[in-house]
Amino acid sequence: MIDKNQLLQHAKAQKATDIHICSGAPVLFRIGGFLTPVTNEKLTAEQSKKLSLSLLNEQQKAKFENDLDYDLMLANEDGRYRINVGYFNGHVGSIIRILPTTPKTLEQLELPEAVKELTERTKGLVLITGSTSQGKTTTMAAMINEINKTSQKHIITIEDPIEYVHTNQTGIVRQRETGKDTQSFYTGLRAALRQDPDVIAIGEMRDYETIKIALTAAETGVLVLSTLHVISIDKILERLLSYAPASDENQLRFLLAESLQGIIHQELIPTVDEHLRVASEILIVTNAAKNVIRRKGGFFLRSIIETGKKLGMITMTDSINDLFEKGIITEGVAKSILVNYK
Image (tube, rainbow, N blue to C red; front, top):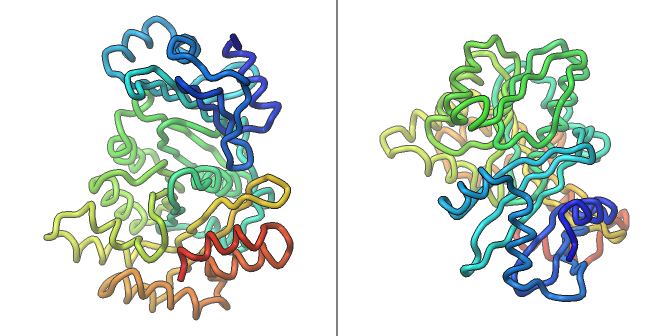
């Protein structure tokens, strides 16, 4: 039976992003976006439990048995890992995310120039959006890295958990993990406003109080970066407004219109050489976009992007077609993504 250290080393050698340990299935690595079996035999329930629990110490095991789920970060000399252990149909299993040791640069991610320009803003809100596992955290870390290496700024991050570790360069980066360094995104953000920040990066917008404070900070002279789970820019207003009571909708629209600088919506696309590449849709907030945010639905933002290409805006259709024309992705992959952007 493979042990956890062998498993982690093998996954890194295979350039896997995730490891799945599941009763009734072989050990699976996610490589190039696809789940790939790496053991010949399926794991028994006992093997899955033993391997999953080997990731926890005795105190963590006791808490897991009480809560039935356990999240942790594991760091050793070889790397850093985000782990979830849980019960699945009565059997113990786990998922391990392999984290890069250092943030990637904007150039390495081959993100559009508009993303770099958004890091040069001195105030306002920049959102990185997309569905689950589309590289939002990686893009935000690259933006933080860009600010850190080019500007003498104080950057505070509030994360759950800390995935990329930043070292001070031209600027200073202070990273806070919820549950460890601060109680929650809300308490960490509230404290950050008293810590002389130039930039605040929030791992995720999760509740209305966090959204309100983030917008207030952005409006009063701090650059705020955050991620939001949403399937397209069309849905951004609907998603944000869903957090607010009906009586606060107009106030939230006003704050968003005044503070939002741009939205980077992205998808991770499998390439012909079995890697992943970011495709981006980018909205730069203009006066026309502000009017849409104040009064209309998110559907109208798409026309803003279509007519704003001279300002650096990019549609997902153009981004995907560019990757296809360069031979980076297949026609089948391009069509499978674009069907969601008609």
